[in-house]
Length: 263
Image 1 (cartoon, rainbow, N blue to C red):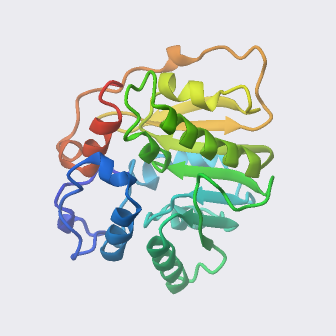
Image 2 (image 1 turned 90 degrees about the horizontal axis):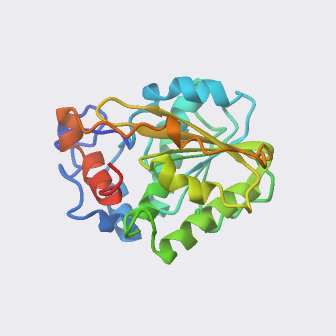
Image 3 (image 1 turned 30 degrees about the horizontal axis):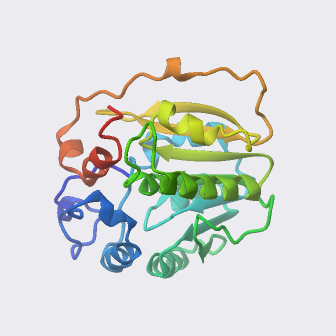
């Protein structure tokens, strides 16, 4: 979810036919019809910065021989960037049939025939147990929080959807597999969900970004320690000093609705 200027026509990666502003409300992101309509006209958009900003974290945590599942690929170029870095055993998934069709076409046109693209709901992943070394999502789970209410005590409906997603990710990961979550959500809000006793993974994180921080979580299956201590003291509140493109971009609209109480 890269912060981009509100006028996307100035972006060389954008489609000239794309609308110049985001939706009027972050709640619109919960509507599947919105995404189908958006993907029908929009060729490319990166949420949470582009790959260059966290490439060093990817390389430190993913082996090129890994089998990787991307949740909510949309029209991101993340899978293409991973492919260029030597990771070819990839499966991209998205709930939107439009996104899947266009991603398949785009990858084939570029000769990336090894990358599989499937339609799938992250709340009910249709994959066998223990079949991926890595599951990665970039801003996809953030959509689940747009109607969460109090971030300290999110609505039960939100919690149920998040836990369904995490249950599925934990199930499809191989022993010692890792889940990478790239998100707006700060550790004191994500930790109670990520570290539910049902999961065997450990949790660590890093940050990246300029005006405000984005979080790069690494959850390692089978590595949880019974004596694992809270690490929130590592977290510094994201800066409220933002660059102009971050103030105008769609990321800012999305963030202000997800994390009004997080800053």
